[in-house]
Amino acid sequence: MPNKKGNCFEKSAQAILDLNDDKDIHLVHGTAWSKVLKRRIEHAWVEIKDMIIDPEANAVFHAEKYYALGEIAIAAKYTRTEARAMLLKTENFGPWESQISGGKNAEN
Image (cartoon, rainbow, N blue to C red; front, side, top):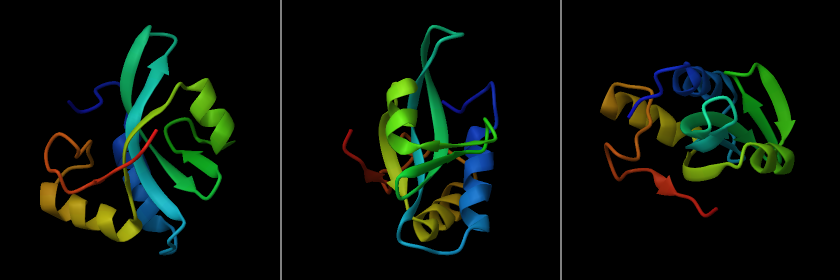
């Protein structure tokens, strides 16, 4: 089910495509706890080593803090090359996990 409230999947996909190809850069799909909605929501962000770029929030976070505060559950991580391939294959920004089993399932 696509995120109806924001553009995190589109913004995060665009952000990773704008960055240099690097093995330490990943587009991440998962869920986060929304304190406003009082439920989990689908979300996307960019991970660069131990830092998080959240284009929807227009902010950068330390990964450990981001994952703890948002009660993040990772569904899949994609390299820049994998993200580009999924964009072309699905013709959408995600989430892709329910559409195709081509993503790398990540451990929480």
